[in-house]
Image (cartoon, rainbow, N blue to C red):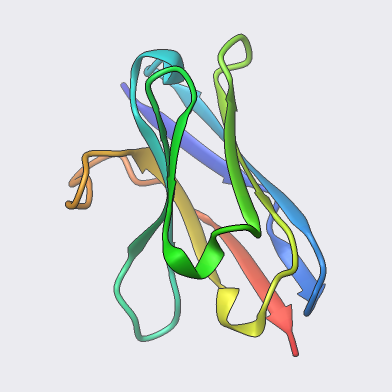
Length: 118
């Protein structure tokens, strides 16, 4: 059974930083493309960043240069380092497998809330 547990969110001032963690159980992150997604109030859930292959990464334009996705295969954890946070980054952040242009249907965790004060 796949379980994805996100943590590391919180309240931060604009310009601040956070590092999110996604502890994966039942799925080796080293063998799957993984992504971080976010959902702001009243908006759809969207992909933020993805990691696939050995070191390939992909980011939505609004976070390029500010966010970095990485993974620790030994710990089976996926990270999202977020710097220079903006008010518009406020959302619940989730991790899941990355399947290109579609959202995964299953195995969503509870997410972790990121709130950026302006």
